[in-house]
Image 1 (tube, rainbow, N blue to C red):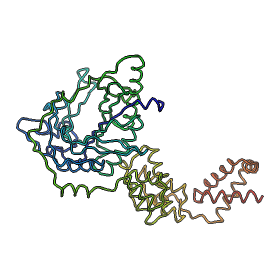
Image 2 (spheres, one colour):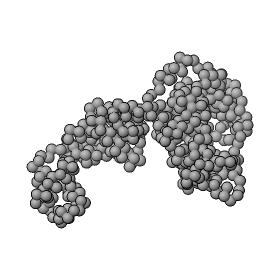
Image 3 (cartoon, one colour):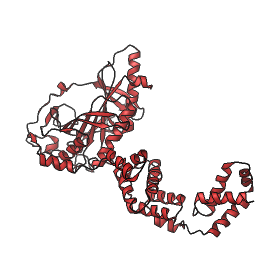
Image 4 (cartoon, helix red, strand yellow):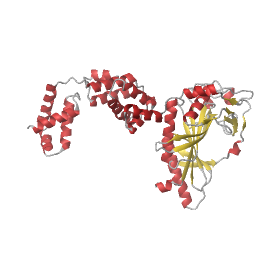
Length: 471
């Protein structure tokens, strides 16, 4: 899609973040359970006479999110009932915030520097999960698991400030980084569902409901932008509707006409009081906020003289930034930055792993970097040890010791290996003398193989050149 075409696209997001609490929003039921419908009670099922009680930790987390997103905090607020009749809400209403959210009028900055306005941050309970079963007696059957009913969510609603699917993806990248730093969202087991709203300037808005994953949101919006432009080119009218996203085909399909706010019949939640937040409480939440990634990246540039790109990569994940700061206490800054951003992240990305999915110990990584800095192990073997550690949990020092990869090769042993390789690969030597650089790389590889990677590749290359030129 061209930049001119993107100028007509208007995108806003509604991000539903599952807060990482042990109990639900208005009752003591756990937020996780092994068996369906085993973690629910009269409160989360909405039995007559049951009374909800607000989970303070959920409120703490919602305030952290609001403050991190530069929102104004509403010191007084209340909850509302959002009425709708779907099987995933047994009491036929959802407790949420409508009139007064926890936070409002904030912003989040994209990697480009563009600020996306945050209209509101509010707290609400999650509905139950609909489980679509197959292979049962009935050809089509849907079950309901109420374990999820009442799980605390914070909804982050943006202004329609994004103009491309790529900007929406960038927004979600920035948002998940903030959430990870705050420690309010479990990326491994928590859910992040996005309602994406897209329109073409001058036409009706279409909502794509409950898309999970940043890639899914980008794909859904890309399809929807093309679909809507196609409708307009045909001279047809875009309907205001809610659509579903198919993750296999990357397409959307119509679900129903889009409801208006009036359809939900919001009323004040009578079983909960109005809340008033004191200055002392708000200050304690504010003081507990961590240094976020943007501030950390700027500090890394100033404190460690890193370039902006490297500082940004290191600060993108709080765990990575923490490992870096621990490493530079005993290892050269440049070596630590290069090792973490190139080798460690390269292995994680190649294997589609995250820090949260691996058990990385700082001392193991720092120990490996120290060996590399002292010259006790080559870059090649250090990388092999790191791969073994990330994928199988084998200690780098143990792997290097057991495989005999420590740099204990003396000068005589290296010269002997070089002479052997040159004698056995005369055609490659001749090709290098003719100016073919690839032949030198081939010879370096052969020496590395003969020495089990115990020698430094740059040193081998230098000695090979000297030896060939002396012939």
